[in-house]
Length: 106
Image (cartoon, rainbow, N blue to C red; front, side, top):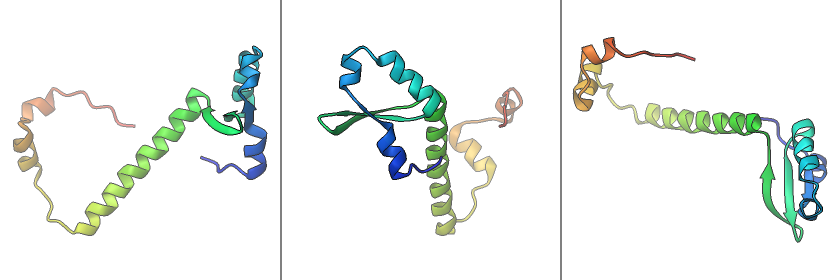
């Protein structure tokens, strides 16, 4: 995700009064064409508008960062590996369960 420059942030500000004037469709078009918008009320940010695609991208990046941090933490702990049979037994998974599972890899 690209970091916003100060000028980009200033250009993305939308006063809430524009919604009150019936400009919601125009604002949503701006979000599609120009990207994220910050709605302000009394000069205080109230919410952020973004496309569903941009939100999903941001969420995926956040989720990946959390998973990476957890992996780094576990690697630093230098714990002994747990055999897959022990994990399967802990969660009550059998080889037959795995054989019947449909797996989709990204």
